[in-house]
Length: 76
Image (cartoon, rainbow, N blue to C red; front, top):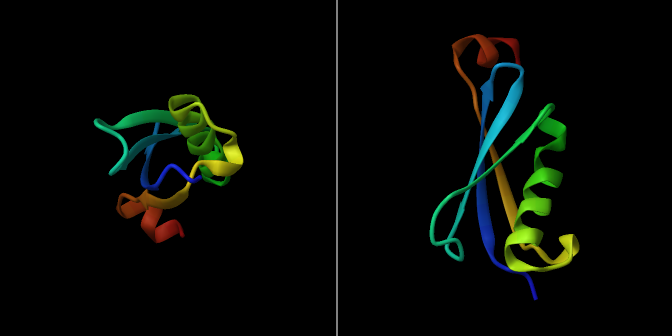
C-alpha cells in the first residue's frame, strides 16, 4: 500500500539540492539532500521508506518542485 502523496521542494544550497518533504501522512516536514536534481526523487523515496518502514517501491506519489532563483531560472 502506498504511503500517500508527497511534495518535495528542492532548493539549491551550496552545490547541493536541499529537499523539504511534506505530505498529509507526515506530521511535520522531513528533510534530505541530493547532489543533482535527478537524484532527488530517489533520495526522497529512501527517506520515506525509512520513515514508514516500507520498501522504496511502495512510498507513494512524489511531486518534485524545484525552487529556482532568478539565475537558475534563466539558465534552465
